[in-house]
Image (cartoon, rainbow, N blue to C red; front, top):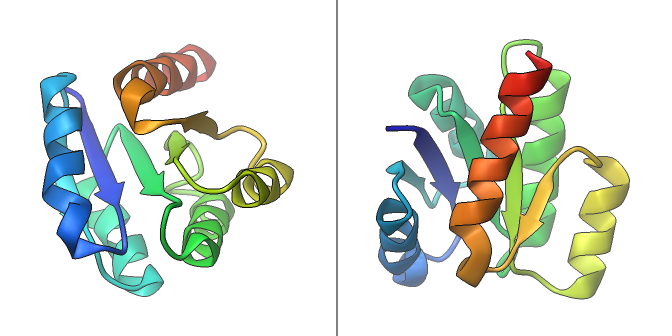
Length: 122
């Protein structure tokens, strides 16, 4: 089963979002801490994809995505941003153009597509 690291800075909604990913067929690890802890969690979990929720603290998500792309050992991991305002999404697209974007409704398909695309280019 593919693994996903879900990063969301609101503990209240974390479990429900993780369950969505689990129902879509993913083994889910969770991180609701600051950017440094999230970055370490990616290294520890070695996920097939990272899902970053932009509904809270999108600037943290942006910094994390940039840090993942800068490090040789993590730059290959697909990133899927979910939710967020139009402004946050446009800002992400300008700095992480290879990332996927989805709503929670379509997250399973978006993650599947991101993982498949990364496997093709490997």
